[in-house]
Image (cartoon, rainbow, N blue to C red; front, top):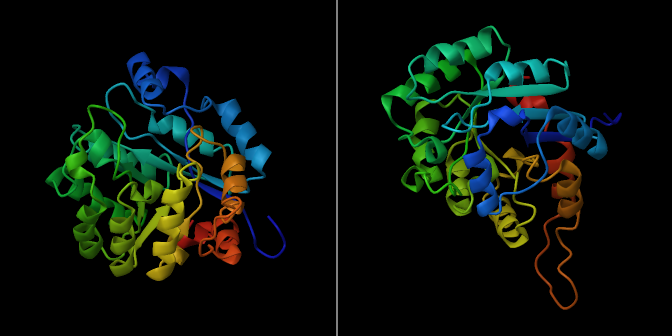
Length: 283
């Protein structure tokens, strides 16, 4: 970390072992162009070092058939980086024992929050089972990250994807910090609107850097609605690497010859990359 307090934090990374993803899941990802490197521990470590990442958040992939990363694995991996890594657990709200597993993940495994996805896991974000998890997260004072918006899996449930469905959650639990992953793509305007009225809602830019026009419009909306201080950098490794994302982000205003658009302030880009500390979430 630089002496002036600047530190590069990747707020959205994944790591897993080959057995954590079934072949059908891998085939679906390939068919829909969700490609990248492998997310094995050595690859993850190499990518963090390559980019000079000071700290990172390891996000457990939302629990669903064919995609099961044990919370114990997440805890063991982040435990190798004391002070440098935070880990988000995942459970399926409809599973028997989900609440107990979440409690164990926080209190015994030492994880730092919860990752859920109504679209991938196929649940109503207001259902009683998940509402109980929100109550627990508020009690434990840990954040909940949501994958809302788009989903590539043909079995996904887009009807539960609108980020505005989280408004009720934000209102009901004003002290619960919520992170909408990937800017809530493609419902970016809805995500920014949600953030404007709910000061406990954040978003990350993971997996947006290769969709420059989408990212540009999202950032301009965030500027207009004055929510940029709650925008976090993230790579979505292994879909992309943090080095690739930093490089693309710093070229945000380069559109080529003949194209002139209102700029994204360079200071804002720098702040999002280097001035979003773990302290935002009490870590």
